[in-house]
Length: 439
Image 1 (tube, rainbow, N blue to C red):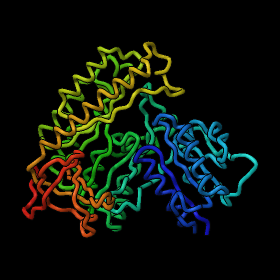
Image 2 (tube, rainbow, N blue to C red):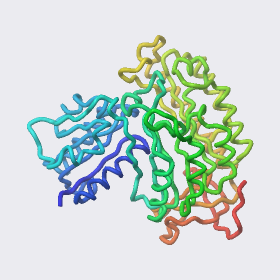
Image 3 (tube, rainbow, N blue to C red):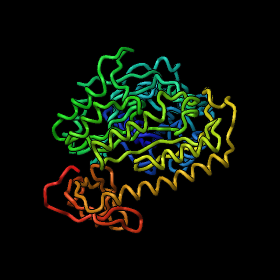
């Protein structure tokens, strides 16, 4: 029995796909092992969004060769679609598969025999037009379930449409079936993932269903206590979705809504489909119905044309906005996008300084949000990661709670009262047996 190990870079979507590819290997009689267990085959799933995709890929290939010098090394994922030839020239790489091929890699590579040079199977992105159902498996408390893939938006900084193709979705009936399978395995929480999750409903280029209809259908799935929406564009986060989540017992009061810039000038240069006023309106709507709701924000700083005044406009906008945390990215150039040719390039030093300012703001926002929840009662779903005799879990509204390790608590939902922040900024809690109130 040949042994295979996996390594995933990037987003929750990549994790769901790696897990699914892993199950395909296991169904064909391969043994799935850890990275360091001298596997016969490595599958490295890459990302093009994070900085230094090339450097990270090379490093992981080098590490793989250390652990298993004769292993067959396969590269898949977004970076593999964008730069197949470049990756094929990395010493140690045996095969590169693009977006249309990655789910067929066991059939394509069959014997996994090394050749004189790396094999490349990467069709034009237009061929990546089918939807492959995927979900992560093995983390007993939470699963990432892919419901949508690709993107029809053309933001001037983003390579995702080039790496993943046009927007396409699973059907509601298939997603519900997957959720039921996941429930049977004992998992309590599902995170819905996609490239542009809110654009769910396109099949063969036609809109046949909607994301709101999907949310309504999943809310009826027995056995799953919690659903989270991983990320949703502000222009696709409709009132009906917010209102439904505010009444739902299964959809958690937690949204991650990309902003990218608080300056309308920069949003226009980025080719985003909204202005800051719409974003502020979405936040106000959420908070009016769910004051305790957690709202995460993606922000890019140092985009071409962003002056210090534009950045301060973003900073002040976020400072005044009732959001809970920020994911901050200094702008980085991507080939075959419009942004690198724009005027007003911002120095790396300024990009990093602005990113640092927003990260400090994020810490303040998060601490303030946590402090607002002290004294309130929630449920916590505890996970099985143990560190220094402590275990962690998350409340419905995504407050991270720390507790003394107790094996009985793993994958269990407990009613707690949030009591205080510890030295690391994590929430401490005491168990309560009173009925949990939705705040």
